[in-house]
Image 1 (cartoon, rainbow, N blue to C red):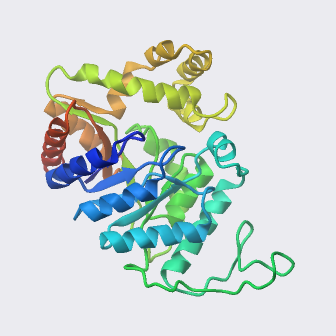
Image 2: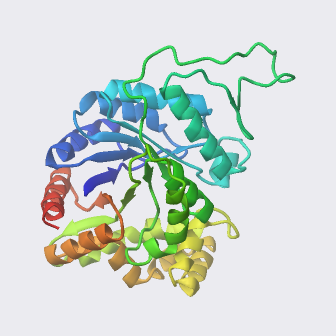
Length: 348
């Protein structure tokens, strides 16, 4: 199994580079750079590419609505060139509140758009002339639109690789099915070993049955908080705020993908209660309502033997890369934890 981590939205770029360099030496394989409605991800990815040597650098994620498909392809190709073939394009739909509120773009047909974007990116990276007439994207614009001067173009620079890995963050059955059919990797949220793989089993199987023979097996990136040692179980509570934010307040009451997923795991009453509390401004109560069993099983926090069991559980559930957050007050402490985790992974 590989090991990945996600940068914090509010990270200090300069401090993060030093820490990623240390984590790289400790055995980190992938760093995901997030993008919401703060700084863009591509700038930080380029900075990391210039200051690292082996770690793969992935967007985690770029919203598919905020850039044209060709700009996504150009950005990924540029980062791949700068990093010497270490870039990965992580993309996802985000949600209506961010897409329509921040970007001012209608949130529509995310699965259809994702399918076309993947196809367009791969045409661009192969340096083929781009002539794509889909249901959502048209390159060149058809007659009657624009000035009628568009023509099929191909990329004027040569990418390092004709196939940059595409990782898709998806939750719904249709989007997970599409991910298993077309993407190189899958980035699910709140992965619960023993439950999640069953929850998405049919969707994954339908997608894999249609998967092109030329694609490598689908990589699965999932994990949780890591803290290794005696008397560290209390650190699981540090996950409560972000879990309550996503389950309780990410999206509208009637349109929260994470709340639906949480409920599907058997926490129906808890999902309603967390959302009610969060949306009424009672964030501390919402955090307290998250079941301890969920925190225990979705994170790798405890003595080394327990962490080893959770690593095996994620592996047996089909996870190929542990996507972790690392507990620790200092970069040195977090680096030691990643080093210990690497040793555990290699023994499982």
